Picture (cartoon, rainbow, N blue to C red):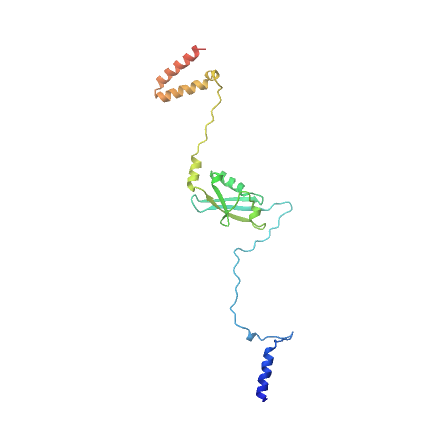
Length: 203
C-alpha cells in the first residue's frame, strides 16, 4: 500500500466517525452562515401602566360608544365599574338617544357582545378606556320611529253606568264631540241640550 492510498483510507475512516467538539471549543464568527436581521413585530398597543388604587377604591373604565354609520353616534360614559353589564350600557345609551334597547347591538373587537357579559369578562384590569362599536338595527329609521311614538293619553275614570251621566266630564266630552262632528257650535250645543234634558227628565 502506497502512502497516498493509506492517507485516503485514513481520511475515509475519519469521515465515517461522528465529529467530537471539546467543551471549550470556540467557533470563528467569520465562519457563521449569513442570515438577515430578524425584526420583532410592533405591538398592537403599548403596555398599559399599572394604576395604584387606594384601599377600598374600585377600578373604573371610561366607555366610548361609537357608530360611524347612520345614525352616527359618539357617546362617552365615564367611571363605569368592571361589574357593569353590556345590557346596562345599552340601557344607558337608549336613555340618551331614545333608541329602543332591542334595536341596539354593541360590538367589541368587531364581534357582538352578549347582554349577560360584564366589562370584566372583556377587558383587562389595567385598561382605563374601552371603545365599543354600536350597530343600530334598522338604522336611522329606528330612531325616527321611536321619536314619533306617542304616549297614549290617560283617561280619567268617571265611573260606570248611571254614575257617568252624573259627571261633568261626561257632558263636557259629549258637547265637544257633537260640536266637532256637526262642525257647528250652535247646533252642537242644541243637540247636547236635548240629550241632557232627556236624561234628566228620565231620572
